[in-house]
Length: 290
Image 1 (cartoon, rainbow, N blue to C red):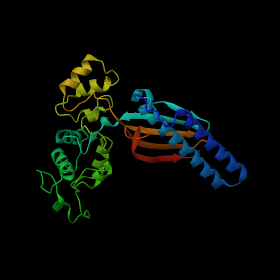
Image 2: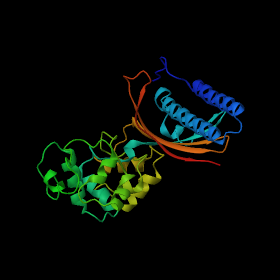
Image 3: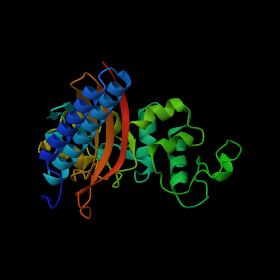
Image 4: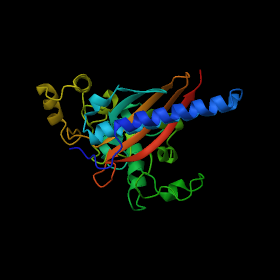
């Protein structure tokens, strides 16, 4: 269903890119010898491309109601350069606040975590997000965090970001890096969407065989496959085919001056928003000159 009322269309993105180009030209013609000005304009143009790509992806996903596969890999061309969109459903990741202990335990085992046992990892995540100070078996509550420079932890509330996991009692930085890319705080169902889940994430599911994980990964683009549907039913309770409403979008901008910029956002459907979507997270992740 379209939600166009007052919303920015793709034509506006072209205008935005054109305006950035005009700004670049005016500044450079006024001060052609100032290298620092040039660098500042290049950054402005690159950031504008990233912003335009972010708006375009949200427009396609939520206003035009396009499937993620339609948007993924699309290149937005503007007068000042291009921006490539990479899109995946956030439900392809386990949720620190909603996924059950068995999934969390399975993930830590799948990534070969070393600093904790899989049971301890899951228990400490649960103790962090629950609302009490009662330690679960192999878990950790506030008395266990004292003396480690972590006063007030765990919060006994939902994780606000995956980054908070760095403070989980006993979890090493190496193990944090192992699990980080498979986790989110924006998959409210807590189940995995097989069309976006990686093979390793699928192996977090209890009793998931290597063969079944490989088959699901190979068939992620064929939702009507009888074999795929049978596997979704087999692992019912851990897999869902419900259409996602939150996506992670990676953007790669290439300006005509040769500058490359990257960004990442998490964006979700929002019927009560005039834009039709809400941005949960946004970060510039890199910038490289010629």
